Image (cartoon, rainbow over all chains, first blue to last red; front, side):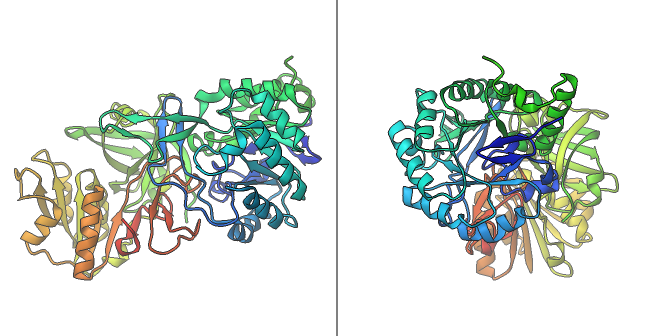
Amino acid sequence: MNTSVTIAGVNLKNPVMTGSGTFGSGMEYSDFVDLNRLGAVVTKGVANVPWPGNPTPRVVEVYGGMLNAIGLQNPGIDVFMERDLAFLKQFDTKVIVNVCGKTVEQYVEVVEKLADSDVAMLEINVSCPNVKEGAIAFGQDAKCLFDVTKEIKAKAKQPIIMKLSPNVTNIAEMAKAAEAGGADAISLINTLTGMKIDIYRRKFALANKTGGMSGPAIKPVAVRMVYQASHAVQIPVIGMGGIQNAEDAIEFMMAGATAISVGAANFINPYATVEIVEGIEQFMKEQNIADIRDIIGCIE
Amino acid sequence: MEQKKKQVAIVRSQEKIAEGIFDMWIQTDLAKTAHAGQFIGVYPKDKSTLLPRPISICQVDEEGLRIVYRIAGKGTAEFSTYQKGDTITILGVLGNGFPVEQGTGKKAVLLGGGIGIPPMLQLAKALGGQATVVAGYRNQDLFLEKDLKENSTLVIATEDGSVGTKGNVLTAMKEQNIDADVIFACGPMPMLKAIKTYAEEKNIPAYVSLEERMACGVGACLGCVCKTKEVDHHSHVNNARICTDGPVFLASDLDL
């Protein structure tokens, strides 16, 4: 039975990755799961310098999901390389670093610092809804997305994955723009912009007013966008958005995803990632699937 | 640190002890490593609710944990319906807990306000019954007062003056000339801010337990941060994670 998949020449032992921002750099969840079992660990977004993030409350539950407006708090690339990358090096899993920035120069600075590091791929976050400058602006206009992809691709030593925002009119157009800019892969969806109001206090539930929605309630939107994006481009698509279990993961793969990420499910079940790895193997056995690659995009 | 885990445990007992306040014992091996000031995450069974609810540990015995909590929404309302023998899904043990050794052999004063009272019980027990507990309630609808009386010198304050000192925990401390070498506190933010100021004036250490909306509970999501005076060791941005670096902090280290 083959569970391995390849993205931009990088071989993953299985298609299960972690969703950026939901898994830190794996340290906190290594109490619960064996990181060696995962296809890849995608780290929390890292910028050129430390970012303090947004005021609290930063998270709130909504029906079937949650909103977050963390604001990409991170220690900056120097501390990250010294501590987080050193930690991840102990494990037999691929490391994908999520890169954030407010300007093209900031993304490039991080990408260049990672050039000689033991990192398999870079995921470029051009879709965070909670940071005012840059970030999502790059991800909501096809021309901007093309330009930023091209500039980062020119400087990156590792393959780049552009992480797309679902908060757009036409996801296929955005996927094509990333591909045309030279992206080696795309990942989607980032969170859907949402809002919650506390009617008794007459206040926004989040200090940032709006937040990104994740969790099982967004899954049908994500599956639809993964299907549309994967039919628009030739490069691999990494699917995510509300994946809770192996069945959800397989649904994304049948829609066209080569690999999948488990995000908010980690908060609901800290064992989710490895349970999904095992669940996929179980499904393959039951359905007599010899090679996981046979199900990728099998729905036409 | 002990390994954290998510598990299905069994409710040993549950009763309502005041309006909207419930007292539950949970049979769990997490009790073996739990101590005062730590908390657990409790997962609702209703699938429209997903995140674990952080609830402080009120008491620990050989085989279980006691939680005393207020109904604050859909999740806690569900927990309040559980009966003896029901399953309960929990994540724990979380957080750093109170530094009990900082109170041993000293005049330790434990200040609990409202639903910040429960963690003071296990702390009072850990301090061998030598501490003074000042518990602040809204009105005469008291809870845990019998347990606290058995394990400390108990002073009560109520907002409406129906029992004990009229006012809050600090009013009671001042009015009754309660002298402290060290303060441990849990309660609403305005109370903790006032305690921080009081402790700084008196030049005594105050350990305060904070509350914030949480998602993961294990330090990964960075949802529940508080402002610190020094750079935090995780993100180097003066934001400590309440769930893992806390919930207990030395008040003078915080920028409340």
